[in-house]
Image 1: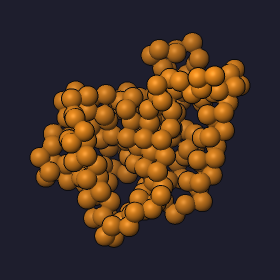
Image 2: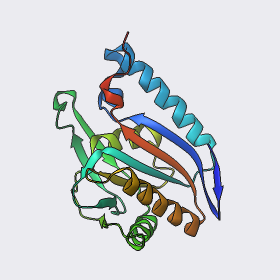
Image 3: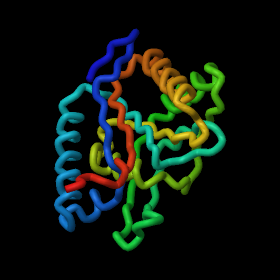
Image 4: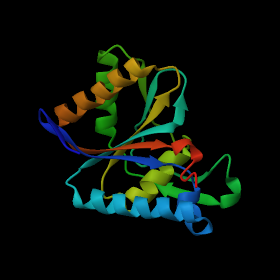
Amino acid sequence: MSQERGEGAVVKGFIVSGLPHILLCPERNPGWADVRAGYEAARAELEASDADLLVVYSTMWPSVIGHQIQARPEPEWVHVDELFHDLGSIPYRFRIDTDFAQMWQQRATERGLSARTVDYHGFPIDTGSVVALKLLNPDNRIPSVICSSNVYADRAETVVFAKACRDAIEAGARKVAVVVVMSLSNRFFTD
């Protein structure tokens, strides 16, 4: 998917599951293994693209007061999923594009939204973002930015937040791959 607008462009788009099973134990279930294979195909597409930034919109990172954007340059922690802690720990270290995070926050504020960046050690990055980045960008080759899903934002506000992201993409002349993380209703297969 490519949409040329101004100087920057969205060159790829992915919708992925953020459940930890896909990262930690895909071999335990054929459905999880299939989704893991889908991730591997998506990673190959991403590596073949000319994207220089990953924008991760995670529906698994709920925010209550406005929109939040991760802006810590190298968040590092050991994550344990709050629901599936028995699956084990996920150590991570990510490379965040702090300049883009700040620019997105500014563009969102200019559009009348409540938005802020988050930059402190130990901030709890959600399972979905951790799973997506570990599987799509395991060596942190492409810098990323992660944003929350404001639980009180309706469709119109979410569109405005996306337009603020587009504003930042255009201003920075970035080639972006967008990743939307969701649970896919926790139903990979119904048969």
